[in-house]
Image (tube, rainbow over all chains, first blue to last red; front, top):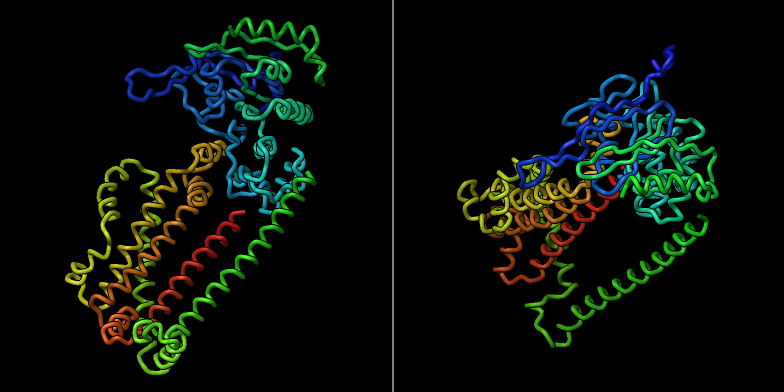
Length: 263
Length: 266
């Protein structure tokens, strides 16, 4: 499916004139969260979506996840329209969404249990969960419960849970939004290190301009009222990137350009 | 990371020391109470007819247990409780889960449920006896009515209190409605369900005992009433003690069950 001999490779994800609307409480008209968004994402790229609160960046991400139904337009993954969540996509949530009654290892196993991958025994699932716990640097904390972990560690569990199902597409909804600045930078670097190993297609929603540039191959800039895509900027900075990258002339130029688009 | 773990360990040691201290203090308090109770009538300060004494209660207990009829009373009360409370769990938990998930049904049934919750269930005793007679059925019904409402209300509250994000996360991994129910709703509302069961338990025990005291042919409450009217304080207190021990044992059983389930969820 993914290795078709075409001259122009088909985009992994295609968002076609997508509009997302929500019912407003106590009002007849609907709230337009995303208005007529168009986007093509190539396989293996890291895309960040940046914009102010209420610009519909999370709604865009959740429609790709199949968790939000679009009012009009559609999302295609590998050419097929998305009608709901699928095994090819996994989501990392802003509020972690970990089950407090499950230990770290059991939380990582959660998605694997639900996806019922054929031919995997209970032991296989646990073994796989252990691998991903190790990958995100939580070895030794397998039997801790979420309330015993710091915010950064909790999100590591969230990331491990999403990676464990081996999705083609990783969708991250402001995953580091509730973390302090230092933890945030560290988690960003580690996420990129993990991503560089297997180059899954990744979509990352954030409201931090620096984070958006640092992580991305392409930055999707969104504006509010109504929520819409205003610009897509390719970030041409060499990888692997480091803290010094953020002081480079190019980085500062990108930062200025995005800030102008946002204001 | 090593440091974090050693902090947890230190905290754990401190907790177990506090625990031992608490057990010691409680034991001393009980012993002191029993000593005062035993000695006060001997000094003539109080009349043993009204207060009895631990030694007399033990003697009465021996008399009760060795003479016939005791096992019948115990099994009647236990059966009434087990059937009434068992039905309360079997109906309260599923109905509570359904009401928690479906706002329409909840709005429909909320007024009558709240009305019954606000009514002391013992006030229904006379009419239940009119309907079901003075046999075991009326006690089973009172135990059921007492137990089912807290179980139902707390289960509903537990389901409604679930984080929406847990359900969204499950759905993002392609969970079916059944998966969401088994892997999120049930374990997530378990603390509220067991809280409801603990609250319902004492109301069910109360229902059985007071039901038997009101109108009955056998059971522990029946004997409490009888010895009370005969001024046989020591016999009466033995039965009261038996009821307390049962209530305590049942509550502990629910706690243990709760912990078992909790660890099974890991």
